[in-house]
Length: 290
Ligand code: SF4
Ligand code: SF4
Image (cartoon, rainbow, N blue to C red; front, top):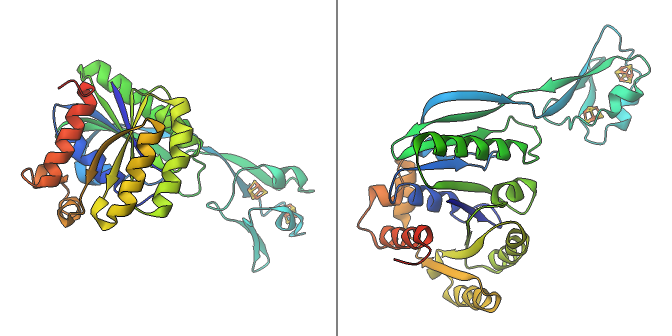
């Protein structure tokens, strides 16, 4: 079974919820698909078994021996990646989008495109199973390809170890990496917060994900910061036939646990929020049959 935890935007507590789920029950495979900002490895500190490179695209490199500093490339680069510095043309690796345009228009053939292979995917064991995660190098495009690689590796790890559940921490938003994360999964958990922007983001991500994935459920995190808005979100869920998986109260112990490199369910197992999270997780993986 594959479960993906996502959110319409960053900062909703998605990774804290995923970390809690990852340590709430049986051993499982965790896949951190938030490759732009992978952070679960900081909590789970996996022992690396493998590290693979990922070819993320191309970067422009200038050959100064051929360049006449005519400035044509600088004026045409729409990503402002090219600048002249002290009489030399410089190309910023992080700003270059790899569009190839400069290499085609340079009258001196002074720009070459080189493959960019700094992004990495890692796989290893952690205290409650296996963990796979990708880390995108700065400036590299997250097309969803690295997410697919992470998912494939997670499936391989599950097959080799006999673990039945793959839990994915997805990227925020509604772009290609999110679609790569949720396509074909069994359960999607959207973590939202009780604000107007939280509701709008939830609507957007709900519309996108329900076309690509399995059953969608919603968790309202920190619901007690705005109970009226939490009620409104709950009403919206009911109107669309989406399950409200639960409301979680604000609890500073969630952050305390993360700072200590643990999930809240590990560090404060008797806290009300830990019990709620375990309950949601058990219902998710048993399809509410427990
Ligand atoms: S277009 Fe070519 S020759 Fe002109 S500044 Fe750019 S790299 Fe140099
Ligand atoms: S490849 Fe495209 S983005 Fe990169 S420097 Fe050339 S024109 Fe700019």
